[in-house]
Length: 100
Image 1 (cartoon, helix red, strand yellow):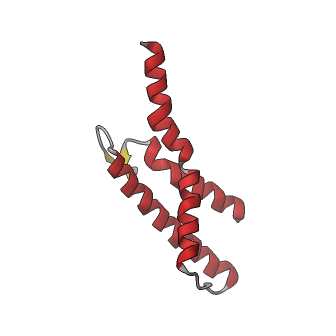
Image 2 (cartoon, rainbow, N blue to C red):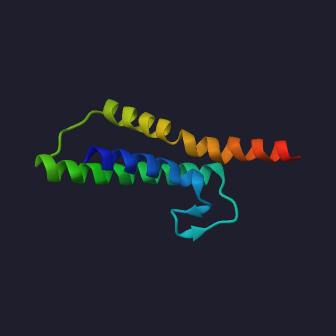
Image 3 (cartoon, one colour):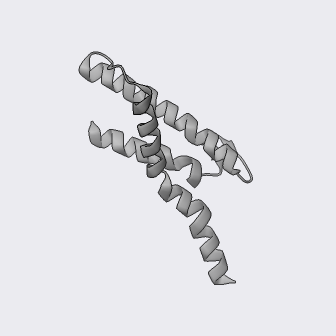
C-alpha cells in the first residue's frame, strides 16, 4: 500500500507540468504557471482525500493532525513535483537554445 501511495504522489505531483490539458480533460493551447499551480493544488487536495480514505479503511479511524503536518506534506509534494517543473521550464528551453 505504501508503494501505491508513493507512485500516486509522484504521478499527481507531476501531471500539471507534463500535460497541456487542464485536469487531463480540457485541452488548452498553452498552460500558464497560474493554471499549473491551481491544478497542482487541486491534486494535493485530491491526494489528501484518497490517503485519508485509505487510512480509514486500513486503520479503522483517522488520526488528528495539526497544521504542521499539512505544511510538511505540501512541501514534500512540491519536492516530488520538481521533475515535472524541470522538464516543462528548463529542459524544453535548453533543447531549443542548443538547436538554434
